[in-house]
Amino acid sequence: QVQLVESGGGLVQPGGSLRLSCVASESIFNFIHMDWYRQAPGKQRDLVARMAVGGSIYYVDSVKGRATVSRDDAKNTVYLQMNSLKPEDTAVYYCHGFSVSYRDYWGQGTQVTVSS
Image 1 (cartoon, rainbow, N blue to C red):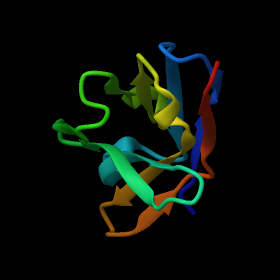
Image 2: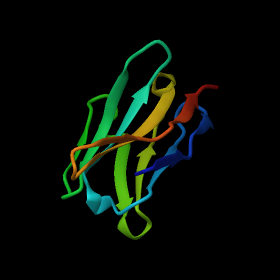
Image 3: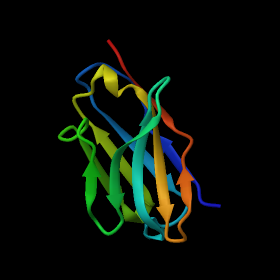
């Protein structure tokens, strides 16, 4: 069973930064794409960024210019660097992987709270 484990969330002041990590239990190359989603209280889970394992990265408009997705293939890890954080970035952030066998895998989520 594929596992995705997020870490790196926490409480940060507005304008601050965080780097979230998603460690996969197998090679990133076993996925077609890996994504970051977030879910704020009372809202649906929304895509934040999508990284095609082949290389292209898509960011939603609300984080464009403030978010950067990167990867360490040797560590089976995908990162989400978020800068200039705003209170509206407060959410549980989830890692998602869509595998080459066309299955969806989700991490357990990590809470990000942006507050002074």
